[in-house]
Amino acid sequence: MSEMRHESMEDSIVWQLCRAITARRPPHWVMVIEAYADETGVHAGAPITGVAAYLADGQQWFQFEQAWLGVLQQPEFNIEVFRQSDYETFNGEFKDWDVGKKLAFGKCLFPILPAHTWCGRGYAIVNRDFDDAMIGHEELKTILSSPYMICFQRVVEVLLEKMESAPPDTRLALFHENNDFTGEAQKCWDQWLKPHDKYNRLISLTFGGKKDFVPLQAADALAYESYKALNNYRYDKGRRRESLEIMRRGDILTKFWDRENLARAVPRLETQLRAESEPR
Image (cartoon, rainbow, N blue to C red):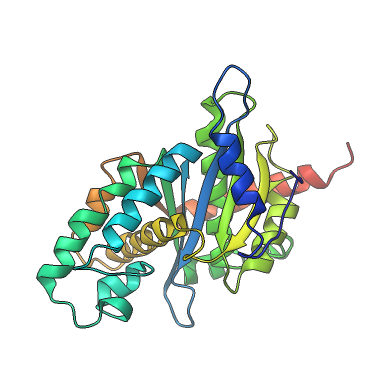
């Protein structure tokens, strides 16, 4: 497997190889943990941006896909591709649904997330806070160029931190949805994530769609819930997110960047950036 891949959804050899590897068993094996990342709130005028990803091994993802598609394809639901924003707003494939049907669907679908993944992490940021924090830090902003990218960077970092207790030969293959940020995600991967991957866990970055890589639909759900959790916290909406409460029954967390932790994080990130650029 090549060290870095930037592939379309038609080129699924990385996905096939990851699944083949994760199906192997000890004593002679290398585990590839698959992470699936997605975003929310990147449209013009959105106050908050969120990114989320799940970790699981190949067997877990196989079981996840079987269960997830089993719910989507039930005759009473008949959903082709799940999108959390459509589910929340009764748009797309959820148009003309009533509240009872929506709640019945959610009660079937969301428990699959904690049941068939190792962990999930979502990060969200208030876009205005990011812009303010990056004033005077242009070198850092060349890599972490947008609210999306700092969330993406942090999500991958916390996944790597989660993997520190895993065996040394465990690797991470990241699958990311095709969107307007694929070029920036690749740049962050090449110039930030790979150079700071001290245990050489990261092996591939692959881009595709939600229909082809079904776990991206799970990442979509957590990204949206990360967005809503921060929106409720920051703007005092006071609404309880039932779907997020179900997801949190597993090792699934949503966190956020705000003015306070950005003020602490930016100097740390700049120190990392300078250390990497110094001659060895």
